[in-house]
Each structure stands twice: as structure tokens, then as C-alpha cells.
Amino acid sequence: MPNNAYTVTQITRIIKTQLEVPALSRIWVTGEISSLSRSQAGHIYFSLKDENGTILPCTFFANYTRSLDFQLENGIKIYAFGMITVYDKRGTYQLNVMKVQSSGKGELALELKQLKEKLQKEGLFDEIHKKPVPAVPGKIGLITSPNGAAIRDFMRMIQNEPTLSVVVFPASVQGEKAAASIIRGIEILDSMPEVDTIVITRGGGSEEDLFCFNDETLARAIFACNTPVVSAIGHEKDTPVSDLVADLRLPTPTAAGRYFAENVQALRTKLQKYRETFITAMLRQRDRNPDITRFFMVSETLRNQFLRFLPEREQQLDLLSGSLTNGMNRQFDARKIQFQNLEKRLHPAYMEERVEVFENRLRAASGQLTTAVTGKLGRLEQRLHALTRTLNAVNPLNVLERGFTATFDKSGKKLLRKVESIHPGDTVNTRFVDGFALCHVLYTEKKEPK
Image (tube, rainbow, N blue to C red):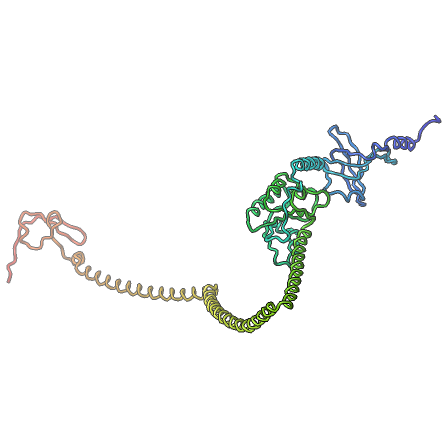
């Protein structure tokens, strides 16, 4: 048996020593995920393979997976950062992953860096181009999602300041169409003369969620806007381009609302101090100058008269208001009754009742019509029988039935009523009840009247 033979453990340790060097302790590796699995402890195991089919086993322990901001799946390409180690039990090398980025994320980061450098060189971030934002705007144009938490946070901070007026442009603040939606909001609000400050805001989110605020077209729209623009994006890490090009950047929607509310409070405090100083100076002047004293006395007299006059006018106003209210209530009650009557007439139960009434009327009219028609038909039938009897009475066929005959000319068309219309030698047509006979006339004799 060779004395210089190595054990498997020894070989593994030698390889481990050779592989676990500083050059491989902090490296980025790119590849496609395969054989993905997760343990109950939260560890993720997978392999990275490249276009040649070469595979590198990877371990992603639970304490590092907390930084993961997208879902790992088989077949997607990623960048993995970590260190190469050797797993002693199996004698295999692997990458212990500390951080993961999607393949596109690295490219997007590079594009974002280049965009920021480009815009900075053009001067879009320079302070010299920043427009002053009014401390207390006349009207704020707010661009944000109407259903998100950002609008609630902003409005909650200014709700106790009625001097702050807000017009909201509902925009998409996430996804492919978000930048175009925000740009449209900037164009519309910038064209409104009463809007003197535009605030673009949304809450926090992942870098992918907030990437629309890194759009170059949006950045140039903010820069070209004549109205001062405030960017209040709740970003977690990197600063979006909209913050850099805006005239004022604030960290969150809440901070933006608080900024304007505190400005109003500060201005109110300052005005109060000015008022107190002015009143104090006026009182001092009053005490020093008799004319001013008389002026204050006259002012106080007028004030007292006004205070006496005011309640009387308020009472008159209350009476007029009461009369107007009563009149309006009467009109309302009358319209209400009309509406209720109309509603009752249109109610299905009422309509069914009306239909039933009309059906009864229709049945009664139908009965009357049937009786009238039946009576008329009866009378016509009786008249028909009478006419039939009359016709039967004068019907020559009935006479023939009793044994009589009728004589016509040879053609059978002309009835011969008198003997003088016949001459010996004529041929006549004699009708019987069941037929006719052609007869030759041998002799005629006219009966003399008595």
C-alpha cells in the first residue's frame, strides 16, 4: 500500500485552499437559473448555466435573501454576487450568493448612470436654473395616483390649512405609461394661470416601481415647465432623475404636505407678530398725541354704534332667512307631494290596479258589443227567413211542383203568357218540374172575355 496516498478529505481541503482565494471571494457571475429549490429554513439553492451548458451550483442563504426584490424562477438570467467556496462533504465547488440582480437591472443601472451624466452636463441639475417655489402657493397642482396612499398623506398634512388650495391631476405613477401620464399632467397644470406650484408625488416602492421617474422625456418636461415643480418621491435608495431636475426635492408625500403647511403656520406666526408690533406702536402714538387719542375715541364710538347696529341687522337677516327657508320648504313640500303622487301613479301596484280597471271596462264593452252584434244578427236572420219565404212563394218552380207547366218560345228564354203570341205551326218549349218538352202547335183558340 502506497504511503503517500491522500485521503478524500485531504484532496478536498487542498482544492478548497486553492479556490478560496481573494480573487474569487467577491465576484459577479451571470447566467441562467436552473434546478431552483427552496428549503424550509428559507435558503435558496439553484445552478447558473451559460450558453455552453456549463453549470455552477449556487447557495443563497436566508440571511441574504431579504435583499431580494424580485422573484427567482427557472429560466431567467441574473447577475449573482458572492464568493466561490468548496462544499467539503461533496467535494464540489459552489458560489455562495450574497446579492442578486436581474440581468436587465444591471443594464438599466448603467443606462440610468449615463442619463444622469448626460443631463448633468447639459445643466438640467444646476441650481442656477431652479425656479423659486412659493412658500404659500395660491393653488397647488398635485400629480399623483388618485387611489394611492400618497394623495391621502399629502392632503392629511394640509387639511387644517384652508388657505392651501389643491387641484389634482390623476396620473399613473407606475408602469410603462406612467411617464407619459405625468408629462400630460405637467402640460395641463402649467397652462392653468391659477396654479403656481406643481407637486409630483408617490409613495415608496422598489426600484422597478419608481423607474418611470428616471424617464428622460419626463425630466425635460419638468425642466421646461414654467411653473415651479416639486418632486416628492418616496424612494428607498437611489435618487430618481425627477428629484434632481425639479426645482425642489422632498423625500415623501407627507414631507411635501408638511412643508407647505409649516410655511403657512410660519407666515401666520409672522403676521401675528407684525400685528402685535403695529398695535403696540399705535397705542404708544395714541398716548403721545392728543389728536390720535381723539381719533381712537371717535373710532371706539363708531365701533360701539356698529356693534349695536349689527345685531339688529343680523336679526332682520335671520327673519328674512327664515322666511326664505319657509318658502323654500313649502315649495319643496309641494314638489315632494307631486313627486309622491307621480311615484304612486307609476308604482307597479297602482299600474296593476289601473290595468285591472281597464280590463274590466274592456270586458264590459266586449260583452255589450257581443250582445249588440248577436241581436243585430238575430234580426237580420229573421228578415232573411221572411225574404226566403217570400221568394219561395213566388218561385215558379214551386208552382210546377203542384202540377202546373210553363210555356216558353223554342229557345226557352221567353215566357209565353198569352195565346195570341202563339200561332199554329210554331214550336214551343213546355217546362215541367222535372224537365221540358218541345211541342208543335196545331191549333190555338183565344178565350173571349165574359
